Image 1 (spheres, rainbow, N blue to C red):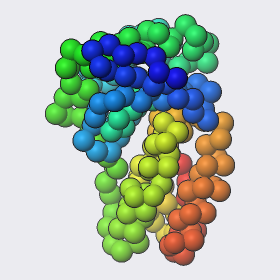
Image 2: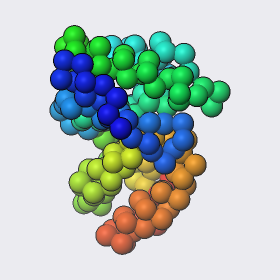
Image 3: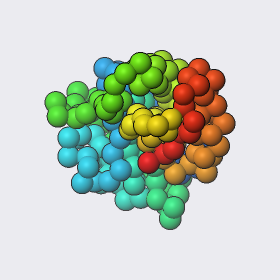
Image 4: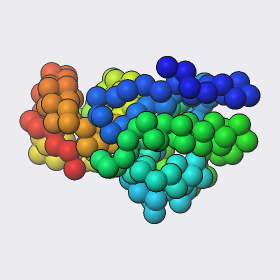
Length: 189
């Protein structure tokens, strides 16, 4: 459903599997690559837009992808009360040409580890799994690999989603284990 078209800026709201998170797709590039996740107002200091969104009562999480923003609300809030304020904040910010993040904002997959298995994991995460999760307003980052156990962090719509455990086991873990037999388990940290 298209919600805004101010100065040719369009924001489309998409539902995600997480009832507390919506994905707002912009007709603008927000990040050159990767994703940036903010879990609270304090963590959002590198992002003027995230800071603005956290100022809206009821917003408890913000994640930027290349062309979308995932916004997570508190359990007590109602989307019918938040949609307009969130869309207006994003539209106004983009219309003014303000930056989504300053130069210190970290983009992309978390670093750590090396070797052939880790390179394979990172490649599959980046090329196959992250795009699939981004379609639902979520993201996953590599947090580490040791002794057959891959540690990842679910972000955006995936963080706190009632389906996160199933996505992790039946989606991410099954896919990675099929391609990389050395992986015994994938855990969310």
